[in-house]
Length: 276
Image (cartoon, rainbow, N blue to C red):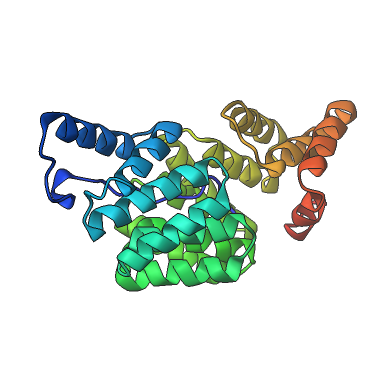
């Protein structure tokens, strides 16, 4: 339910590569590619990881990390099939690579295959049951499937293991709002926004405000979510819903129409949440 999904990054170090380069130029090139493969620029990350993969200098562990990191870059670029190939390869090389399981689960979720997503989040958590990112991701799937009890268990555990993970707080906020526990939901969203003012946090708090019939506050939070780059149909639809409740029919219908173009089923999801 909550986007963006939480990917597990892995860090490459020189110790993962052997035998060492024989010249200064080779060593310098290797270190540069390691830096790029670990870096935030997705295009450069793909180039750096690809160079490492084809360098014949990597151990199996180093290769697995390079494939995982390139998979993350492909995921960010919405090249999901390429990402799956890389995560599959990373797991062939290192079957205990929990971050690759988590990341592959994220891609399956983005492709709409919740069952395979859950299988991968389960596999990551079998390796480390305190892996907060996988707990949040699994909670998001459960919440979207309206299995709120399981979702809340996962969010509770994620908050327990990582109190600074904003996505755990915002995920629990949205799920608590769905179940009518509005005061606790609002507290969770406030904490999520305090930890990091993201579109996800504001969108979840805005939804909570809708359930509390606080129309102006909901519109303000949806404005913040959209300014921060929310691509959620629910942000547009929720803002339109609040504007409609305030009688601003023209702006309301513009938001609702834009939301339905992104997600034709968005009105149904709000209706299921008791917002008709």
